[in-house]
Image 1 (tube, rainbow, N blue to C red):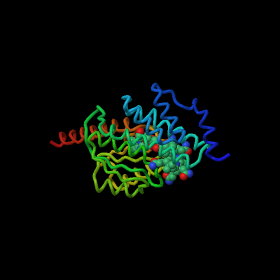
Image 2 (image 1 turned 180 degrees about the vertical axis):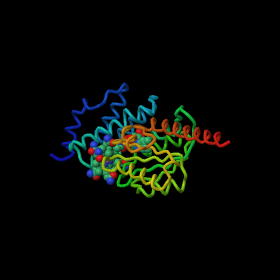
Image 3 (image 1 turned 90 degrees about the horizontal axis):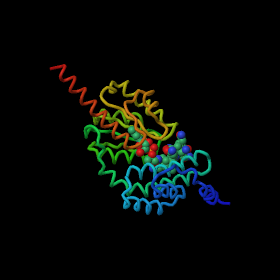
Image 4 (image 1 turned 45 degrees about the vertical axis):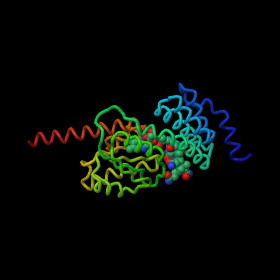
Length: 249
Ligand code: B12
C-alpha cells in the first residue's frame, strides 16, 4: 500500500477529530484540508464567503483547524512532510480569498496606527500565520515592516534601530525556534534598546505564560487577539509618553 493510500485510510475516519463547529461548511473546509484537496478548499471557502460566514470564523474554525489537524497527524507520525506541504497549499488556497476581507476588517478596540517590525525567527520558515497577522495589522492602520522568515536575531535588533517601531513582533512555530524570541529580547537589553520598543510574541508553541517568562509585552494566539493587543500596547505607549511630557512641563 502506498503512503497516500495509507493517508486516505486514516483520513476516512477523521470525523471525531473535527472540532465541533456551528456551520457545516466550516467542518467541510477542515475536512477538505485533511483530504489535501486544495481545489475543494478553495471552492468551499468561496462558498462560505458568499454565504456570509464571518471571515475570522472561516479562518479559525475552518482553515486553521484543518491545517492544525494535519499538523497533529504529522506530529504523531501518521503523515509525512509531502502531506504537510500539501495541507499548507490547501490552506493557502483558502486564505487567498479570505485575505481581501481581512484587509478591510477593523478591530474596534483602542487607537489605530503605529509602526510594527515583524518576522519569523531564525531557522523557522513558517509564515502563513504571520502573513495573516500582517494583513490584519495593515487593515488596522499599522505601518508594517515585514522582515520575512528565518530572520537572524541580530537582524531584528538592527531593524529596531533602523525603523524605531512601536512594536517588534516575532513569530515562532517550533519549540526548537521559540528560544530565539527570548534571545532577541536579551540582545535588545544588552544594546540598551529594550525600553524603546514593545515586544510581541506568537506562533503555535508560544503562550501567555511564555510571553511573561521571557519578559515580552504582548501575546496573541490568533491574529484577531494579536491586533487587539497591539492596539493596547500602542495606546499604553502613547499614554506614558504624554505622562512623561506632563511631568517634564
Ligand atoms: C503548515 C505547516 C508547515 C508548512 C509551512 C508553510 C508556510 N509557508 O508557512 C511546511 C510544510 C513548509 C512546514 C515545514 C516544517 N514543519 Co511545519 N507545520 C505546519 C502546520 C501544520 C501549520 C502551521 C500554520 O500555518 N498554521 C496556521 C496559522 C494561521 O496559524 P499560526 O501559524 O499558529 O498563526 C496564528 C497565531 O499563532 C498567531 N501568530 C502567528 N505568528 C504570530 C506572531 C505574533 C507576534 C503574534 C502576536 C501572533 C502570531 O496569529 C496567526 C493567525 O491567526 C504546523 C502545525 C501547528 N499546529 O501549527 C506544523 C508544525 C509547526 N511544523 C512542524 C515541523 C516539525 C516542521 C518541519 C521541521 C518538518 C520537517 N521535518 O522538515 C518543517 C520546518 C522547517 C523549518 N526550518 O522551518 C511541527 C513543529 C513541532 C514543534 N513543536 O517544534 C508542527 C507543530 C507540526 C507537528 N505537530 O509536529 N510546516
